Amino acid sequence: MNHLGIDYGEKRIGLSFGDDIGVAVPIPAAVEPVFEARMEHIAAVVKARRIGHLVVGYPYNMDGSIGFKAREVDDFIAKLEARFGLPVDRVDETLTSHAVESASKKGRKGVEAVRRDRARGTVDSGAAAIILQDYLDSHQPLM
Image 1 (cartoon, one colour):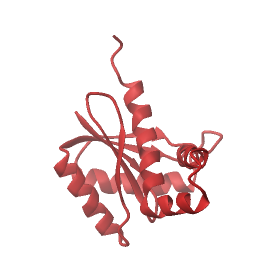
Image 2: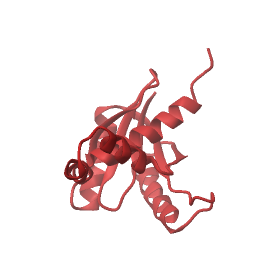
Image 3: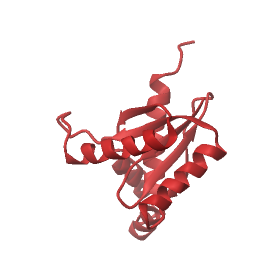
């Protein structure tokens, strides 16, 4: 089955792809200026990649509770479910964007390059890949 990993943000929606091989890879983020255009971007990916399952990063608070941002993601998930009719799983996204940014800085990209990557959605799609990889790793059959 083909999976779409999603890192929701108000301005950018990071995306990643994974299949039965079990490896998540970042794909271009939905960075269109209007929410409906970002949803159209996702729809095109769902169709082109024959997605059968959505995995969405869920922003638990550090103490494991659900806060304002999680409720915002719940609203987004409801829109995904209504539009695509696909199963959706939530995966803890705690510190995923931070991990991607830290890796970029360690790669000596520099602050300006990290800012440019964030604006393009590269960081968000990297976070979506971490989210999806966590899901795939926890759902792989044991050999």
